Structure formats: C-alpha cells, structure tokens
Image (cartoon, rainbow, N blue to C red; front, side, top):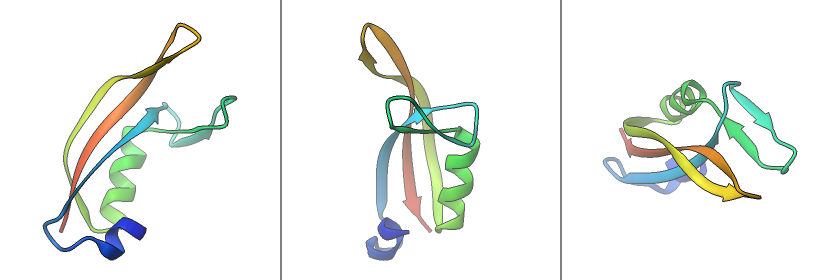
Length: 76
C-alpha cells in the first residue's frame, strides 16, 4: 500500500520475495515467504498490474539455495 500511495499511474516497481507454496509463511530464518498467487492477489488489490514474475534462486544460505520470486509491477 505504501508503494501504491506514492507511485504515479504507469510507474513501475520491482521486488524479490522468498517463494513458498503457502500464501504467506514465517520461516525459521524469521523471513516471510509468499506464493506467486498471493503476490498477484496483493498486487491487484493495491492497483498494480503484474508485468512479469520469474522463479529463480534468490540467494544461498548455508550452501542451500533459497527459492525466490522476482516480480515487475506497473501501477494501473
């Protein structure tokens, strides 16, 4: 909601998220993870179009790949 409030119509916003099968979950790392479905629902709820979402490795922690979502949004 904060980004939506300050971004002009047509403005673009990019973000990364830890990926989860659940809509949203707090992981043992104390980071939240989200599903692509939840990302799309929240983007729409706040007036954004989802231009693209890519599933990629976000980073490594203790030699384990952390799955992520890279998202590009546009304000409607």
